[in-house]
Image (cartoon, rainbow, N blue to C red; front, side):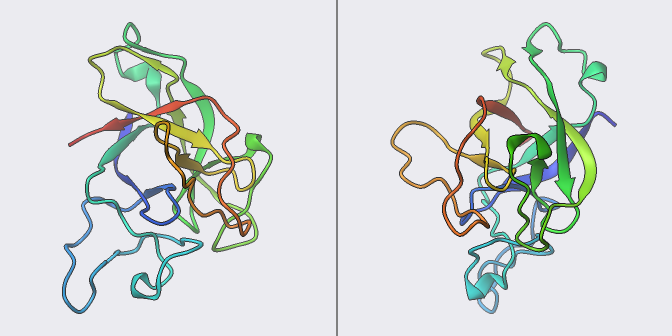
Length: 170
């Protein structure tokens, strides 16, 4: 398997996390119905401390870019990203921070690669960077984004990386 589906972003901390997408639909009793979605540092009480999925985003992450067959269009693959088995977020230890909202430090799970360059016809969403305080991949977006997502450090995320792409699958 070279890719894994089931990834999205959190409405509150803007972190890229594994949700097992698609999550169950909201109900009147549980408006967010976040399924088992790790730990968010600022989730509202209705979300029971879990990430709140962005229903407009469905992503797949690459576990092995050598088997994809699209190296002509997608390049600059960066390794060293992992799924935290506690908070379900993507993180890297190379950014300076390693704070997990569920534990003191992130726990390594599966490993992933992210591209820094791709062709115009490829299905990657720009605007993902690494936080230097907690090490997670979070959505910065374009210019004019006034909020960089809540960080477990008690402040907002602080981008310390190049722009990475995350692949849409819907």
